[in-house]
Every structure is written in structure tokens, then in C-alpha cells.
Length: 318
Image 1 (cartoon, rainbow, N blue to C red):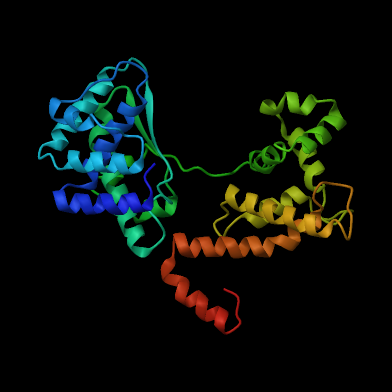
Image 2 (image 1 turned 120 degrees about the vertical axis):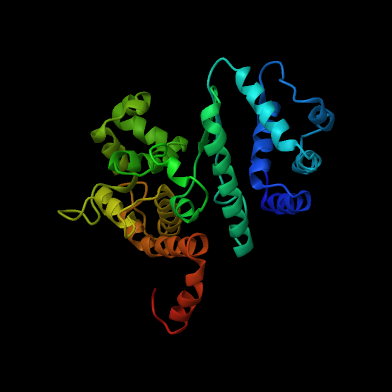
């Protein structure tokens, strides 16, 4: 995994060798296959084999290897030939997964510009080479806001080959904190105590009523008792953004804050009905909203930071 400092160095190498991000990703893909191959390694052309006769166990060693490879004038052709032979050597499909592209480059404006150029190079490579490979298949996980800002030739060719990941099912959404809670042995014991292990033994096939049952053990059924809102509906509606999209990150942040709040509150005001009292959710929602806004500004709209700071300085909430 290459760090932000590593990507900065790679950009300098690309400028010095007059190579492109497309060349880098082609080489990076070949090296990933080479280092994780589970059978006899498919060796590249002799010009590349000589460079690969070094240790590749640290990020620094990998980047130094990439620097030597990128300095070869015909590296694009040689790497493409290597990847093609790697593909032909496979008898079953292998997924080449690219993830973490939103955070791997850093958070400054220069880092974001570097990220944009790098991802455009990656998708340009996939556009050109992906259909020619029979067993090696590219899969890229990318934030939607980053995708919208990308500009590269034949971007429209990805339409119909991509899918937007959205949380449209409340049951699947609620399973996220439930699965986290079940990592606690004490919560597992609590669940087992009410159903003799029935729910835990069938957790891969839970239906809606079972998920709601465990959810109610965690935070209760209603926000204030009586005929008040169901806690599950309250969370589902308030975690949504202005476009009615929901992020599991915000949901987990809510439970992190609510857990901390409950730990502070419980010694003075014990609550024995559920693990986390419903009031903890409402008490912590504002902090989660603040975190979500900060992340939105830093990751998607840094140009709005000055406006946000100005609003805060005059005591107005953005």
C-alpha cells in the first residue's frame, strides 16, 4: 500500500522520466500480480527481470524498483506484454481490486490534484486494456463525488459498466452497528439469553423481525416510549443527507458517540432497559452532523471552508 508521501515521490519520478500515471498503474498492476502469484511466477522480459531481482518488502523498495522500471524507454510496451502473459497463464478469473483511492493520496489541495490525475490515468488504462484481458478483471471502488470531477477520454464508456452503491434497505443498514456490537462477548451473551442462541446461529439469514429484535436490545424500540418514533426510523431518517443518501460511516460515528455518552451518563443515572438508552442517540446527533459537515468540506468542497469559518465567526450555524 503506497502512502501519500509515496504517491508524491511517484509523481516526481513520472515527471523526471516523462512517463504518465497510466504507465505507473500498468506497472503497479504487474507488480501486484507478481508479488501475490500463487503458482510459478510468470517472468517478464529480461530487461524487467534484472530490475526485479531485489527485495520488494517495503514501500521504499517498491518505489525504488518502480523508479528504475519507469526509466526504461519502452516500459509501457514491456509491461503490457507482461500483463498479457500473466492473464493468459490464468485458468480462472482474478479480480484486480483498487480501493482506498479517496484517502491514499493525502488531504491537501495539491494531494487532491495529484489524486485526480492519478485516477484519471488508472481509468484510462482500464478503458484501453480491460476488455482485452480474459481472466484478469479490474474493479475500482471510488467515491461518487470524485468520479464526477474526473475528466478523461471516453469516460462515457464506463456507463453501463458501473454501479452506484447505496443503502436503500433499512434492515441491511441496521445490521452494520449490530455486527459491530456482536463483537462484544457480553452483547452476544445478552442476545443468547433471550433466544437460546437462535439468532446468533442464523445471523447470515436474519429476516427483518430478527434484526429489529436485536436492534431493540441495543438501543430500545422507541425514542421516548409510548407512541413516540421507533428508534430505527428515527436513525434512518436523520442519518440521511439532503439527497436522501445514507452512509454507514455516519451511522457508526453515531454509535461511537452514543456509546461514549452512555459510559459517562450511566454511573450517575443507570439505565437497565437497553445497552444504550435512546436519548443517547438524540444527544449525539449534533456532534455526528458536525463531523459529517467537516468531512464534506475537507473531502468534497474545500472551497467552502472560508465561508463556513465566516459563518462560525459571526455565530451562525452553517
